[in-house]
Length: 157
Image (cartoon, rainbow, N blue to C red; front, side):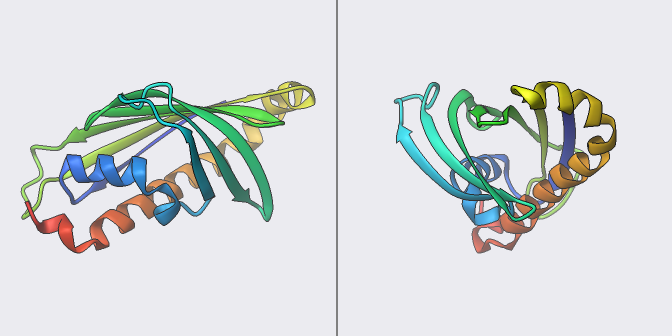
């Protein structure tokens, strides 16, 4: 199941990239813990473990950084017991917005692939789950927007 959502953030692109990728437990309502297991010099191939909470249920994922091109793109792949998830972020300065600070568009594209029984269940339930999953993705990006814009340093540049 694939999902995509975007948000405009009233902050410079470098700052949004850094906060998105290095402060996820500060802004995410789903990610509760993140532990870097191995960090490579260019971040590509770095591994981590994440604990998420959704609908009152904790899930643990082992992940790898699949893309890290500051400040324009980043991506991860996470493996859990029931499903795997890829999440790719694109960061883009929005020149047509004239404000005190620069505006950044963040677009997240995610794909969820079921494992075992969920490999069959996910496509069947995907139609019904799609709307709620897209809403959850947009909610997460809106949280990122609030987090970035509330920081004092957002207007400094």
